[in-house]
Length: 426
Image (cartoon, rainbow, N blue to C red; front, side, top):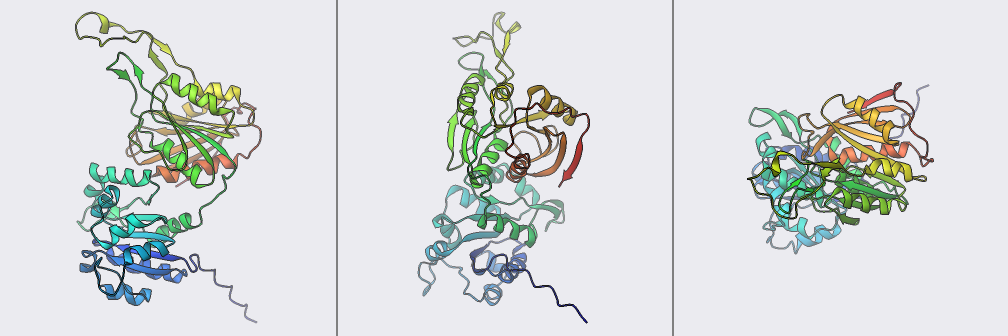
C-alpha cells in the first residue's frame, strides 16, 4: 500500500504585496526567475521597470508571469499615480538587479523615473540586490552609496563572486533567488527575539589630543558596532549607541551618544551600564593618550617632538565586567596574528562573557570594509568561526550567539579556554 505524499509546505510569502523593481543590468533576465519564485511562494507581485531594463527583457514577459500590468513610465496615461499607489500598497520593494546607477540615485534621493520616485515615496522595507561588474562594485563612489543606504536601514545584499558579463571572475553577480527570498522573509517577518532587552553598544574610534590641531586615533570606521546596534534595534531591543567620531549616520530608533575621547566614552558607557541587560563593546578605544597635551599648536622646530609621554586610559571592558550584576558583557578584539590565542587570553583576563575577534589584516575584513570574518569565543570555551560576510549579517550572528548564552547570571569568570569546542559557520 503506497504511502500518501507529504503535504506541500505552506507558501512563504502568502498574500504579501511586493513590488519588483528591475533595472538595466545584463542580469535582468534573472529577475524573470525571481518573479516566478515569488509568485510560487504566494506573493502578489507588481513589476516596475526602468527604461534601460526594457532593452534586456520585454515588459510582456513580466506581465504574463505576474498577471499584472508592468509599470515603465512615470507619465503613462491611464495608470494614475502608480509611483504613489504601488509604494503605499507594498509590503516590501525589491530591486533586483540593481545597477550602480540606481544605487547612486537611491542614496542621493534623486527621483527622475517611476522606480526611483516610488522608492523615495515608500515607507515599507526596501531590499536592494546589486549586480554589476566587479570594478564598478568596488569603486569608492559605489561603496559610499552602499554604506549610505545600509546606514538608513536598507537591506542591501552583497553580490556574489563568479564569472561576470565582461568575462572576468570577480564580485558582482546577482545572488540566486533563494538568497533573495530569504532576505525578503527576514524583513517581512523580522524577529523580535530581543524585545525587552536593553542593549548598550559602543562603536568607532576615539581621538586623543596631542594639541588643539593634532590627535592620535586608529582606523576604526565604526561599521561593525553600528551594524550590531541596528540589528539589536530591528530585533526589538532598546538600544543606546555610544560612538566615537565616524562618518556614519546613526541608525533610526536608537539613542545616539557621540563622544570623542576614551575618557568621554568611558563616562558615557559606565553611566549607562546599570540600565543595560547586554553590553556589546565594539569600539576601538585608545589604550594610551598623551599625558600632557599642549594647549597650543606644537611647531615643527624645537625638541617637543623628540619625546612624548603617554598614560593609560581606563579599561572600559574590565570596569564593566567588575561592575556587572546580571548583564552579559561582550568585547571585541582586532588582531593581526594569533587571533584565537589573543582572543582567549583577553576573554579570561577581562572576565567577559564573549569576545568577537577578527584579523584586521585579512583582505576584505579590515577597518572600513563592509564585510568581516570573525571568531567568537564565549565563557563556556566554545569557539565559533564565521567566514567573511556583510557586517550587518555578522551582527545578527553575534546576537544569536549572545542569546544562546541565555539570560543567566554573568557574574562568574570564564573558564579556562585551553579546552575548546569549535564549530565553523560560513
